[in-house]
Image 1 (cartoon, rainbow, N blue to C red):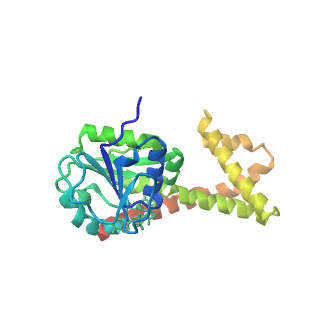
Image 2: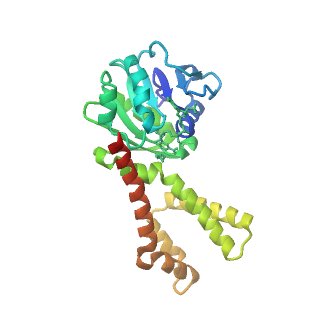
Image 3: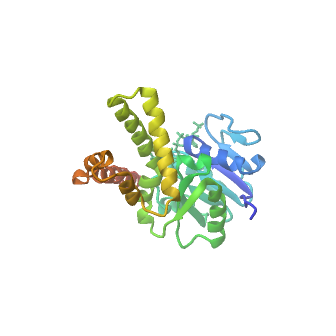
Length: 270
Ligand SMILES: NC(=O)C1=CN([C@@H]2O[C@H](COP(=O)(O)OP(=O)(O)OC[C@H]3O[C@@H](n4cnc5c(N)ncnc54)[C@H](OP(=O)(O)O)[C@@H]3O)[C@@H](O)[C@H]2O)C=CC1
Ligand SMILES: O=C(O)[C@@H]1CCC=N1
């Protein structure tokens, strides 16, 4: 099936996250002439993509607007952007902790408002993007968003917006937690006697190989862990440390809950 692109993509903000999305879309065939980026620095993003530092007089017809700035900038952005939006504008927001109701309040002319929560591996087409649309969003807008998210990796729609901060904690923030894990794994290897460089290489390759294996395996990660652990062997002793009083599970549950709760705070502070 051929890739369907929006008539025009207007990106408000194009930093760490939105920049990776755009790079992937361009690599997958988005015509750069069909994308405009608004960013205060005016820094170029890619050959052929127009970068502006101020809002145009109007948006192209049937524009898909992607909100990719920081959540606290929503009010400032809406003052200039909302008057340009018409009934055929579609808004996709990647702002953390920003419910659809807050977006609808600021963009009353727009029917199709969709929340998306990507993560950094979208750059490789191996991201996870969580998605939510309320009942007012048209089926064609859902399809258009599905189409543009597909080149980025997996898409996970949720029915209940109340889960959006949990989804964000798991997959949106998740890469940071896993990068931290890889770093700690490598430093732990160094602590038991390996050289820093070798421990770093081995930690990363072990995580990468294990993730790939888990993705292809018929068994669950829990079963695979037991496969590595020979009875009376070395791995079991290590697993006993992670499993004692559910230490690892509790640590990760606390980590995700803290991230999720921050999303709730961001929404309340608005
Ligand atoms: N980082 C991540 O892994 C993820 C981030 N997100 C969400 O993405 C959004 C952006 O985060 P991130 O990319 O990390 O942040 P960055 O700081 O890297 O990017 C922010 C972007 O917003 C632009 N910007 C700043 N001020 C304004 C303004 N007043 N109007 C319009 N654009 C403005 C910046 O412009 P300039 O480039 O000129 O400085 C920059 O391009 C957040 O809402 C976050 O919740 C979602 C999922 C994952
Ligand atoms: O830290 C943040 O708020 C954003 C949301 C997901 C990843 N980064």
